[in-house]
Amino acid sequence: MMFKIYHFSNSDLSYKTIGRTRLLAMIVLPIIISSAFTTYMMHLGFDPLGIRNLQMGSFSKENSKFRAQLISLNGRLNHVKNYMERLGRGDELLRTSVNLPPISPDARKASIGGTEENTDYGVSPTANSLISGAAQTLDLLNRMAKIQEDSYADILNKCKSNQRVFAHMPAIDPIRGGAIEDGFGIRYHPILHMRLMHEGVDIIAPLGTHVYATGDGVVSYVGRRGGYGNVVEIDNGFGYTTLFAHLKKALVTDGAKIKRGQVIGLVGDTGLSTGPHLHYGVMKNGIFVDPELYFFSNREYNVDGLYDTAASN
Image 1: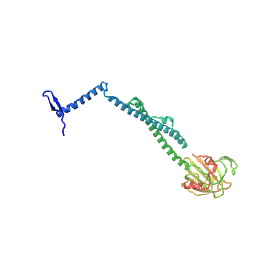
Image 2: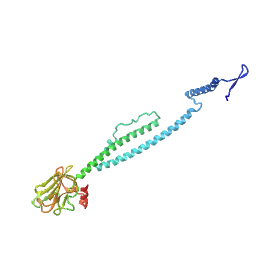
Image 3: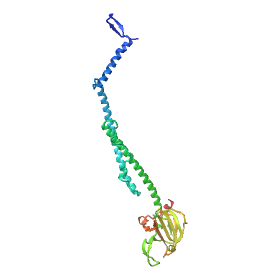
Image 4: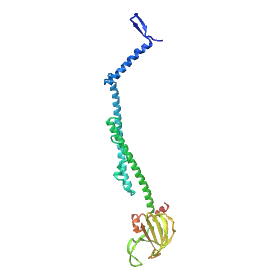
């Protein structure tokens, strides 16, 4: 059922139907005029309907939440920064433990680019400052993480290198339970009866006692060598060479690869010797050094099973 709207005509004193077009004009036109008027008044600075206040109130709430989130974000970023600084301090201890030089403070703080302090993000000064702070902290964290990553890689490589060095370094007694009769240094030679440099240590042990390699390496000489009698010499690498003299018998050959704890010969009394013993020498970069410097804990570590474990490893 269609409703009709009438208006009273003064010309013929009767009610007449209002047409659809005229009706729409009567409804829409006032709305358009009102909206245009309101917009114009707001443009002039008037806000008759309080629309601007509503908008500003909404924006203010959003800005407050935005600032709060930025403040919280900056706080969390600073917490991560403090954590990275603690990692840096721990990193220095790790580097020292593997004989790496520490990273200088200047290197840690060196700039590799970043966010400028005066970047304008098109927001309020307070928000701009918070965003800039967060961006700068993120940039700093990125640099710190890269330096830390590189340092950990250096430490890992150094550890692997050290493990190879430690495996080749003379580090165990060449005889299980032997007693040192003559140490390293100037001594009165018991046979030649004169003071001579003793370039090693003499370890007393029964004839035929096993002699063990003190570090990984390659046999560089097997045979007789003057007053040393029967000799086995091992090139341990990394500047180390070990000498085993007065042997009854060598149990390895030239060029053989040797592992620490491997039996390489038997105690004898060949060469200039007053009785069964082993002359053991250690050279570092071609110069004889005191072998006892490479004995751990006054040789107390030398217990049953050590040599078999070393050989199996």
